[in-house]
Length: 354
Ligand code: FPP
Ligand code: MG
Ligand code: MG
Image 1 (cartoon, rainbow, N blue to C red):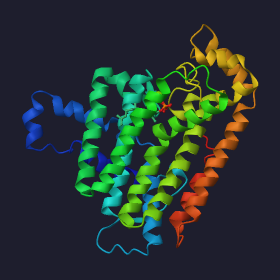
Image 2 (image 1 turned 180 degrees about the horizontal axis):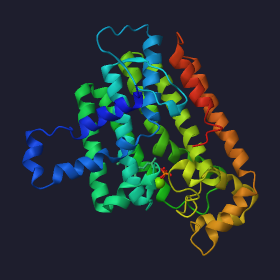
Image 3 (image 1 turned 90 degrees about the vertical axis):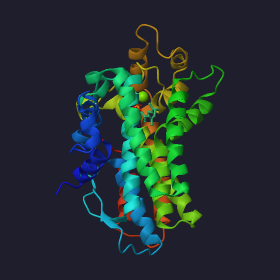
Image 4 (image 1 turned 180 degrees about the vertical axis):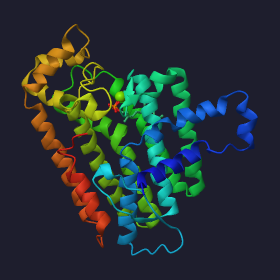
C-alpha cells in the first residue's frame, strides 16, 4: 500500500469530495466546483515528499510514547513517505493525523501563492498552478485550500491547538514580507545573518515547529516542557531544511528539484551562501543592496559565491541546526522508533540532494 497516497486522498476528500454532493450538483452548471476541484487537487495528485506531516506525526508518536500514552480507540496508521527515507507505519490519534493533513495543506497553499509571487512556472516537476490557470485563480485556489485547512483545524476543537496552528499562517506572511524588504545599508554582516535566520524561521521553520508543538499538545495537554521540546525540534530542523534548500539553489539542477534553481539571486534574495561570501568579498554587498538588479549582477554574484567559503560555511550552519534538533529529540523520555527517525531526519539535512 502506498501510505503517502492515503493522506493525499484524505486531503483531496476534504478539499472537494470526489463524488459530488447535492451542493456540488447545484453549482455544476456554473462549472465552478469541478474546476476548483481540479485546481485544488492538482498538487496533491502529484505527490510530494509529505515531509511536514511525516515530521509532525513522528513527533506525535514520540510524544505519545514519552507520556506512556495509550490510545486505544482513536489510533490510526499514518503514511510515511518512502522518499523521506523512512518507511514504516506508526500509530497516532485521529487529531494528530489531522495536524499532519493541516500542515501539508497550509504548506501547499503557501506554495500556490509563492509561485505567483516568484513568477515560477514549474513545481514538483510539472507546470505550476499559476502557469496552468493564471495568477488570479491561483490566489483563490491558495485561499480555498487554507479555508478547508481551517475547517479541519476547528473540528479538532482545541483552542490552544487552533492558536498554535494559526500562528503559522501569520509567520508565513511575515516571513515573505521580511524577504521582500530591503536590508538597511548600514547593517553589519552579522545583523544581516540574524535577520535572515529570523526570516527563515517565519517562512519555513515555524510550520515544522508549530505542527510539532500541536501534536505534542495533543499527546499531553498540560506538559509545557514537552510542547517546548517538540517546538524546538521542529524549529531547528526547519531552519536546517531551509538552509539546505538555499544551498541547493546553488548546486542542484532543476530536474533534481522539480522547480527552478539558480533562482534566488535573480529574485533579489541573499541567502546564507551569499551572506557568508559578503564577508570575504565586499563588492558582493554593493550588489546585494541593489538586489542584484544591474545587468549581469546575478551571474557575477553567483561566480563570487561559488569561489567563496560561503557554501562550506552554510554546510556547517546546517550541521549546527541539525545537531540542536538531534539534542531536542534525544531529550524526549522513553525514546522509541519514531524518536530515532526524527534524529535520522535531522542528520540527513546536511547532504540532502533534493
Ligand atoms: C517557498 O519559498 C515559500 C514559502 C516557504 C512561504 C510562502 C508564503 C507565502 C506566499 C505567504 C502566504 C501564505 C499562505 C499560507 C497562503 P521559496 O520561494 O524560497 O522556495 P521555492 O524554491 O520552493 O519556490
Ligand atoms: Mg518565494
Ligand atoms: Mg518560490
